[in-house]
Image 1 (cartoon, rainbow, N blue to C red):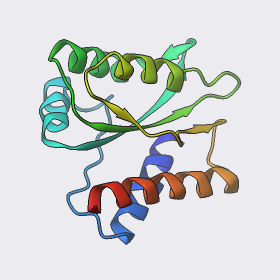
Image 2: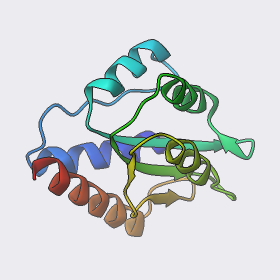
Image 3: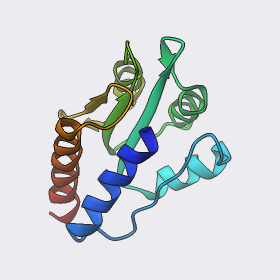
Image 4: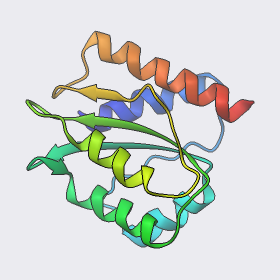
Length: 136
């Protein structure tokens, strides 16, 4: 369901005219490729499920690698997903917040398992905010 949320955001960004959108599954892509790609991007959407009260391990590894590589000067949006305790978003924001000159978008989205109609509207609003910033 987290992938579905990311797809909704990516599709909305494309509808708004954003070019060069790329989606990566952190559980199936080598972290070195993800780090390299992050350095090519001005904006990132980080989407993660909550896993054992924390960030899904491959996403946490990516964030810690980005921090270790002095990743900075980017705009980041966060989507988290958790059935009963979606805590990954807060933890992702803390890691990103410790990086230099990072802009965190305020309208992060928290899912409870699957995308409901209200969350679809939130995801589209998040994409609209991103698109406006990217195309400005």
